[in-house]
Image 1 (cartoon, rainbow, N blue to C red):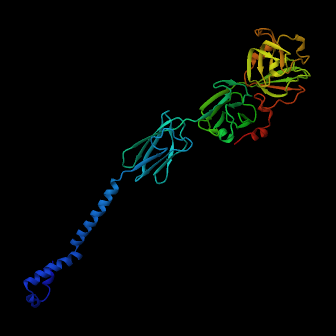
Image 2: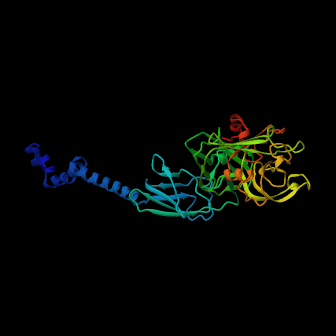
Amino acid sequence: MGVSHISNRSEKQSERWSRRGVLTVLGVVPAAVLTGCSSSAGAAESSSSSGSSATASVKAAKAPTVMVTPADGTKKADFTAPVTVTVTDGTFAAVKVTGNDGSTLAGTFNDAKTTWTSAKNPYSGTKYTVAAQAQGAAAKTLTFTTKSPGETFVGYFTPEANSTSGVGMPVSINFTHAVKDRSTVQKAITVTAEPAVEIVGHWFSDTRLDFRPETYWAAGTKVTLSLRLKDVEGQDGVYGVQSKDVTFDIGREQISTVDLSSKEMVVKRDGTTLATYPVSGGNAQHTTWSGIMVISERFKQTRMESSTVGLGDEYDIDDVPHAQRLTTSGTFVHGNYWASTSVFGNENTSHGCVGLHDAKGANDTSVAGYKFYDSSMLGDVVIVKNSGEKTVAADNGLNGWNLSWAEWKAGSAV
């Protein structure tokens, strides 16, 4: 190309140029041409591309790095914060976190898909395996084990799982440690019903939380208690351990009303009078609590000692028949075989209990004590009126129905 360019000049000039001169020009011109010709640019471009390719190769050769918090291999990891998995020099294709108990931790990626965060904290005392795969790379496996809590608490609940109770039965939970963070603990417990109804919790103390609807349960209701207390901190350093669901049923409606003025008890089943029994209540010195009470324990026979309720040695009967507890403080509705039959329906002679005529041995099916016991179940409602005594405290037994709905809801922590 350089020679062709020179030949365009005049022949006269061409003749004056020596062969050596031509060679000299030929030695210079190609250098200049290398700067501007396409073939030269291609060479330069090729050189530049080689540099870029080398840089890209270095970048491509840098494998994604995956890290987990708590750190891989940790033996006593904290369980009070979510799990995070991060990747550098790449993006995630998938992350799965599985506990040795078979549980999995759900989670979400950030917008860049470089960080995965669990929706919940890991459980205590559990070994977790993290399987994380970056785009275009092999999966990475990392592990960590969370520590066990130092102190724990549980909630003992009433009624029992799979039981059938009367319409007055609340869900009552007693904790083995005092709860300071009532809101957090209450949020970890839910009570639901079919058919649905609003159910609210009420704290009677830092160790007792009860749940109930506004009015008695509807007959035939199925109630579910869901405890999600595992690793919930009730107070500093004390964690719950339960994660379970419990169901129980509500049976027929039975509400018995004891009028200690007329000294009789009317028993209604699903709104219809089932029976009327003569009774004897507390005397003037030992009046019976008034108000709404719920049967919380039942005994075909039991021992009753006056010393256990602060009455010294006034009585000690080891075979009281058909006893059904109404208060924690010792109020029962029970059979009575030691009093004359003329007492029932005519006099209030007891130390605070409601008595019905009965027979020693608790096997006589013809007497009122047997019949009432036989018709009853845990959770049945017994209402006492005209006793001369004030209304029983709502926490004295399962007797929260004595609080108005507004008062009940005021005791909720959520």
